[in-house]
Image (cartoon, rainbow, N blue to C red; front, side, top):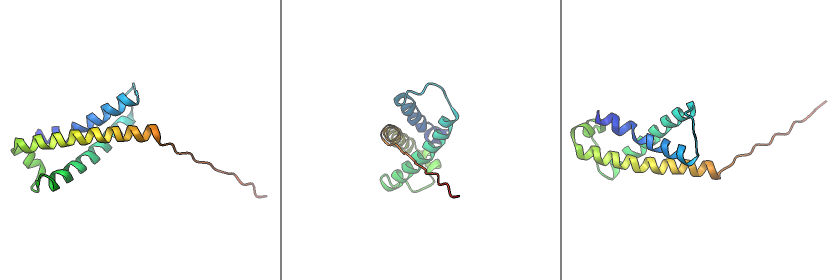
Length: 108
């Protein structure tokens, strides 16, 4: 149960930040897709952080379940990374614009 909470819940923080900053009102399928992407990147970065900084190199889900200290570290790190990912995406959405121009040629 702890591993489910630690793996799936921090991505909700990113979704909440994105919805609040971009003033989204309705739930759409895009939010579900973004949730999956946030879960992927958040957990990938968190596992890398846990392995290299806290030296947790064994089976991560088992360590989260057996040792409450690892669970707390994982959730705190994942929540911080979730906030960073949420604000990073909002910054890109508000400040980066892509424009594509096409020219039609008429060859007779």
